[in-house]
Length: 346
Image 1: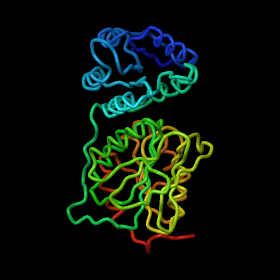
Image 2: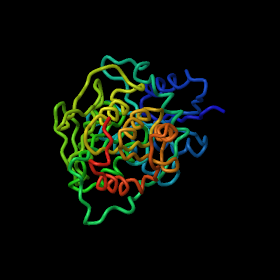
Image 3: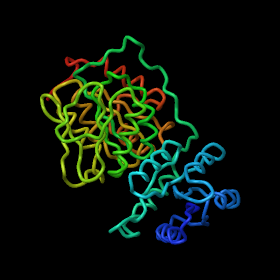
Image 4: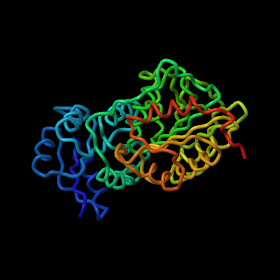
């Protein structure tokens, strides 16, 4: 059975380009289009699509307002179509917080529609299989006031589709003295800058895009920049390294690259793999566990897409699977409890 898609964009040209890109995939059927949210609302009632592609800026009601209504009144998979500008990235991240499954950039200077929308059909198919929720989970069972960070600990987290919601849930629960934390989330360069800035505003810890040579310190969270480099950590006193090389596990930055580098550190380490499509991070997390790391994974029921955590769990890389609401407390507990003596160094 084909995936039925409604295309919502105020530009007739853009509606045509999106429709053409989707119709190249035989598993997708574009069942209609709408020029604004008012038209879209009626089309949703009449056509009952499986997935909506939604523009951010539209007349009568902007995409964020319309998305909020969709997620509150009739939750369904939505893929945002946005400009890859700073402002576009900020609005798109807000959409992902509200419950949009994924986002894709519009064609820009020097980028054709075919190039810009090369992954659109894949994102729509992933969205059709995703678990959509109207509200972000509330963290449960956080450590009490006696929580103390192991200052030698390095925590590595990997995520992809659905990761904005998951990372916000986890990282905004961390205390000001959280373990030094490195994060690889699959998203474009402009988006990672905006995401780090958003997290920094709402987190007790300091959050920033990782820069080459930055020392890892407790109370700081480092987000891998999107674009042309992988984030690694290395050194007796660990520092961030941005390594420009080919994609790994289909991605750059890659979770596998980050996890493998953390596995080589001579200190207490922990790894967490969150919602996302594919297998990126499964092998790297296994190497971390074999090196003595504590490892956790997001469970199927709370994952927007149970791909990466499933692959890691089936590979034997995940010590425990937990719901998103239980992960923040569990992460802090294993980071506080881990000691250097518990780490096996090859």
